[in-house]
Structure formats: structure tokens, C-alpha cells
Image 1 (cartoon, rainbow, N blue to C red):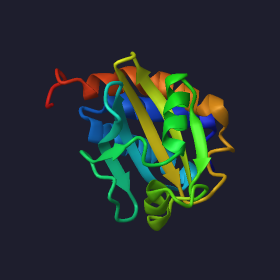
Image 2 (cartoon, rainbow, N blue to C red):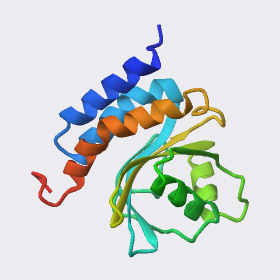
Image 3 (cartoon, rainbow, N blue to C red):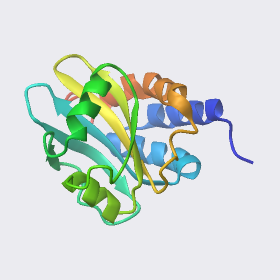
Image 4 (spheres, helix red, strand yellow):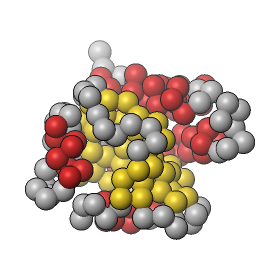
Length: 173
């Protein structure tokens, strides 16, 4: 029997809050959300306001991926990336289909690893640093069935913990 979405958000938040590092937090997200969304990729990412790039902080992928922790992606590499970042800065979870921009190297790389759709979830934005969760699924409509509230509640629940884990003062960092 599938869990209802409210329970799934609660359990995911609890798993992230119990984590001692960012990799454990991401593992908790994947372990709990993968059955619901058929996840093929998940990552915590950061975009410092003064830099034109996104840095992958933690990453999981079902297939071989170039989106490893420490990888930096130029935010202007694809037309959709600046639009997604703007939406995240407004506090909006944003879903999009992979492959809509045939010229995008990011779309091409995601397609090669089996990702058909992506949702990005804002976690923290203080004007200096934008933190977000990116989830990729193998189907195009995977994230639309959950609705915006699911991702907003997830963001609110995990934000403080993820920020603490990213902070240089966090234990083990």
C-alpha cells in the first residue's frame, strides 16, 4: 500500500533531520521518495549569488552520471537554468521536462542517464546563497501528481537541517 503524501513528507523530513552529513540526508530523501517518483537522480546544489555557476554538493544517481559532488555547472549553459534559478529565488518549486531544449548540454546529459523530468525545490535563499534539491525521474509526469504543496512542505521541513549540514561549521565538514 502506498503511503499518502503527507506521511511521505513527514518521514522524509525526519530522515533528513536525523542525518549527520549531507550525503546521509540525500540518501534519506532518495530512500523514501524513490518509490513514489521513480527517481533516477537526486542532488543538493548551491548557487552563490556572485557566481555564475551551480555547484553540486551531494549527488545520487541510478545510472552513471557526470553530476558528481563538486561539479560546477555554468548557469548560462542552458536557457532553462536561469529561469529555474529565478523561480527558486522566488521560493517556487519548479518542474520541467528534460529534452525540451534540444541545444542544451544539461538536457542531453540528463537524458543519457534516463531522466525525463526534473523538479527543483528551494531550500534556502538569503541573497548570498541559494540552496536547492534537484530530483530527476524517469517519467515525464512523475512530479505533477504530487502538486506544489508536497514540495513546499518538504522544503520547509528540511531547510534548516540542510543549511546546518552545508555550513562550514557543521561537524565533519
